[in-house]
Image (cartoon, rainbow, N blue to C red; front, top):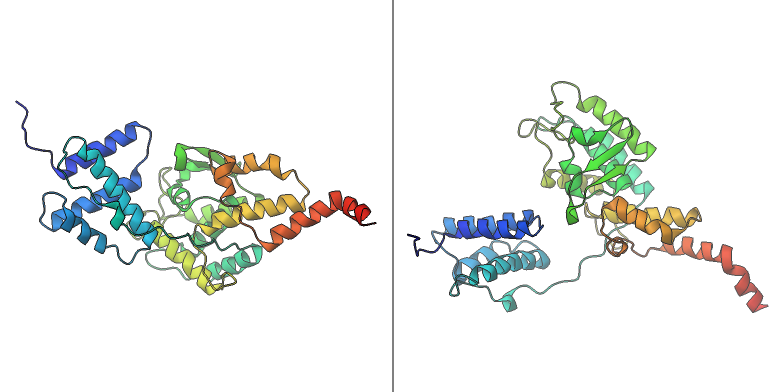
Amino acid sequence: MKSSQPDTLDVVIARYLQRQRSLGRGYANEERILNSLYDFSKRAGSADLDQKIFQEWCKSHEKLTANVRRQRQRIARNFCLYRQRTEPSCFVPDPSHFPHRRPHALPVIFGPAEVARMLATAKALAPTAGSPLRSAVMRLAVVILYTAGLRRGELLRLTLADINLDEGVLRIHESKFHKSRLVPLSPDAHRELRAYLKKRLEPPFCASPKSPLLCNFSRGFRGYTGTGLSQGIQALFQSASVRSSDGRRPRVHDFRHSFAVQALLRWYRQDADVQSNLPKLAMYMGHVSIVSTAYYLQWMPDLAEAASHRFARHFGYLIREGAA
């Protein structure tokens, strides 16, 4: 006979995640957030969620930005709404108490000169006990992020098996939007990858095809964590004085913005057909459409100047004749 006792919180979370994934959603971030909520309530000695536990959990995120806190609270609320279908009396957070959404900071777009300074800084990095390949890893990370526009997570998940060194191609497995793709590297990036792998494949580093491309010793030949890579790159931004005109330091994700803008800038300067190339850029970046790609194409003076010069070359005579 089935017990009338309601399922425990962890069981309901597992069932919710299973349902969402059956609909084709990844829900890796949601799993992490909901498990942290469950662990928090467990440490607080509570068998279930209530207003007090939820508020204390939210308070533990006070150092995070308003948008990140709002996202986490919405994830928790969506789970509670799912649970409410079978448990009408369960706790559901009130969204009117969530932090207000703030406008995202504009990306910091940088170019070859800033990247050159970062590479010089990375070359001078000393190895550590936890990261004997520190200099080589940071140099390769800068090159791949800037020239291939990968997401941070895509770079971190690369294994040796994902590298076609002969062709200079990276294999990106199901990433955002559940899309897999092949990413051909530029000749310069291909050379950097060869140089890195020459060091990476030497003993005592693990050469198993499943081992991470960006390898360290921190946890016994484990790959870099998102935090570890971000901290290393932020140190390069700081040392190489990479900042916006108003003094803001870039985020790691701004590599992706800079990659997209620099691609557009090259096309304008090469007099290429920009509109027909946008779907190619979307495919290369792993987007489902050019609508997603357009988000990365920020206005900047160099881009406006290149577009204006191109317009003048093709149609300037119309303006001159009209003026005459």
